[in-house]
Length: 274
Image 1: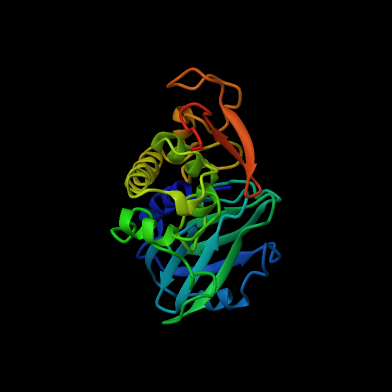
Image 2 (image 1 turned 90 degrees about the vertical axis):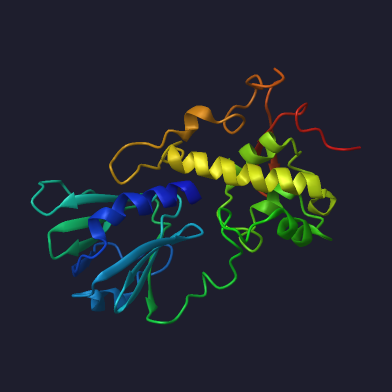
């Protein structure tokens, strides 16, 4: 599933082509994604695209008439092409946003688990209302994480993956951050010390920033808008490395299902306190 760095990469990739452009039409070939594509999108003709932003793992196209809320789901991707290009439409190309200058934003989603929803002007959407702070913002601090973790018995990996705690720390980056911070993924959140919260917040910010610079992580489905894969997968230290030697201590990387997600960790570098 595309996570925060992949969505941020998509935003940065399409923004130069779309910001300031006028929407000519939105072509919907498959309206049934995770939710039915909002019929209000047909009203977006002649709307000027003022900005393209990211909130958590959602991509938001802001216009004078309202906003378009996009989620890439499990396998969605966005591509940019020009109207004069003779590119065949595949069966998974479900939506085209066409601008008056001939630029096309094409949404491809083999599993159809993403979404294209409409937000009325000056309103918010229920999917965005209960989201925690952005991990790269000044609001995500060690003091905040420590206070939020008190009396929380859930595993710290599940805790940092909760969008109500902090947005965008998906499975890949949670595994990587906990390894670098030297914290066992099963440690109860309430047992995190202030020092551990300092390391974890710093590490999450560092890991996500580096992943964005590398263009995200391509494991199966994610492709950047320019058609190239993300390269962060080449520097993953634990995720996807089951039974491979830990880069720090040489012990085999182990896996365990935590919160219904496959979790990668080093049993020596991330010891669970007795």
